[in-house]
Image 1 (cartoon, rainbow, N blue to C red):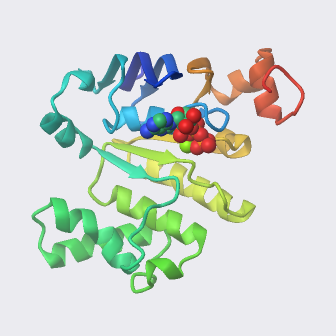
Image 2 (cartoon, rainbow, N blue to C red):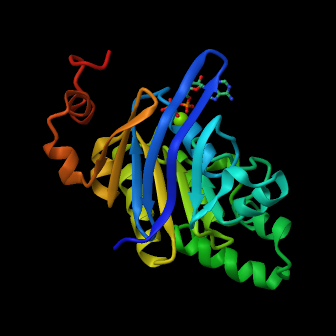
Length: 251
Ligand SMILES: Nc1ncnc2c1ncn2[C@@H]1O[C@H](COP(=O)(O)OP(=O)(O)OP(=O)(O)O)[C@@H](O)[C@H]1O
Ligand SMILES: [Mg+2]
């Protein structure tokens, strides 16, 4: 049986009158890449923020390695967050710093490692994302694809158990997109203790990297399974999304 990494049960969240999550239940297996797909504005980023403990739900349970994090106090929740790495939708680099300092930042802030130890770790991370010689480049001089790579290196530098990506390939050309997809897959495969959760609305990318896919629609998971499940489903809402058609039940 697969080990569950993160388990969501009946997760609900509203903002004022707007119900965004209406009872999301989902198992995210440990040691795999799970991709959550869904339309823009459907609550994917909100869901990710709940998983990481950055938002608290109105109702429901979020179990991380079996522990319900919705019951934790603020201090414990902050500690829990160190088990996660996050690659933000816009990479969220410090533009005034160079690549090396961006990746070193979490270690300088949150570890007791010496500078030589930090150097070893940062250089290993930069090499693993294909940016071996880019450490001295200023963050604001990077291409979109390079920024995402730095984002992955920074999210991985403290050795997280869970790596979350929010639309890692939005705005990249098709070749760069394929390279970032390969990086997500390689990062998972090189770190068996890692669990990856990716938000995407790119079906080709999803089929390339996912062990498991879940589709979020109108605040609920309407289908979950493998790429096969998604290729074969008769659900017209899923078919429309997967095929990228204008006509269909989703308007
Ligand atoms: N802090 C907040 N306060 C109020 N409303 C919010 C907040 N965060 C998100 N929302 C609303 O929740 C809905 C879902 O937002 P979310 O960012 O999760 O969408 P998404 O699925 O990630 O979309 P996209 O694919 O465009 O990134 C949106 O209508 C958004 O305006
Ligand atoms: Mg989003």
